[in-house]
View (cartoon, rainbow, N blue to C red):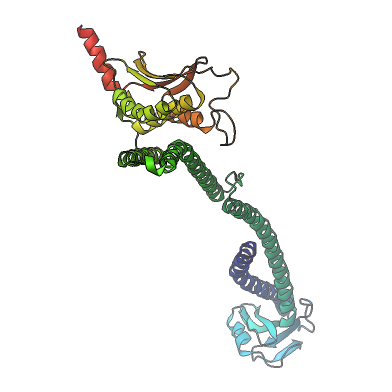
Length: 443
């Protein structure tokens, strides 16, 4: 790019100088030739006036006044024959026209010639011819042209220097953009381009930055989705594996059609649960389940039913309490289902005793409490920080649950550390709240 900018600039400068300089060179040449003719004419007029004075005194001229340096001056009679001075013996036809009373130029191949009539008492008695070699004028023209060519070369040199500077200024931010694009291709999504002062290049840099940011956000969402999916599917898969292994570990003599059918039915239920979790997470990742109306009583009834068997296997119970005439929540079914599943799974893994799920109306929001009878949670525990699988404690589940709750305009908080109770706050559907207010006003 730098070479092209320099090359195009130099070519443009050469073309501009040529288009301007060529006519100027012709004008300068003509000006110098005309100036030389004017000088010759002035010298011829001086000589003609001197001769006219001599003729007026009836004195025969014997010498001619000096003309311009390197010029020949001669006097010719009316017949065109040279009488005095230096010049051709016979007056040239072009200069002879001066005998009619006009100053006439009569250039030859080697000289610039001017003829001026000599008048005595109103009568033309001859012609003064002054001639100078063309070589001197041509030398002067050549020197002027040489100076013009030098100035043109200097102008081209200046254009070359300016083009190099401009090319560096334009190419440098483009080279930086190319380096940033390579870094982006290598997986560095933190690329940022500075301002170059060139609007178009800055627009490209801004587009590159926004592209890097979008790609980075997309990859972060994909990684989070993969981690969330892995976490949410781990517990059902573990239960499915344990159920199948228990069925296989049953002695052959104790296996019955009913026990095998129960194991298969439990496996199918777990597969349905796995499919539901995958569908929920995919819907949340694609953001296709927003702004719906959620019946908490129905959702909690379906969700807790899936956990009763798991808790019963550990000798624990699950109780669900839903307030009467609970309004609908303005939240995604998939998001709330996964949050509740995370909270119940957390109680099943780390809690003890009965797990209680309560849904209630707290005025400006709906609250879903998930509590157990466990020993409690330390005050300094980082509950909602996403950690790796190998880290102890609550790990990725509660972090996922809080992010899902906040995405729905709600909140997830630990309202009681011992025994532990988590509360999910959800916004109430606007039409349901307005209807309830109208009924209260009627009452």
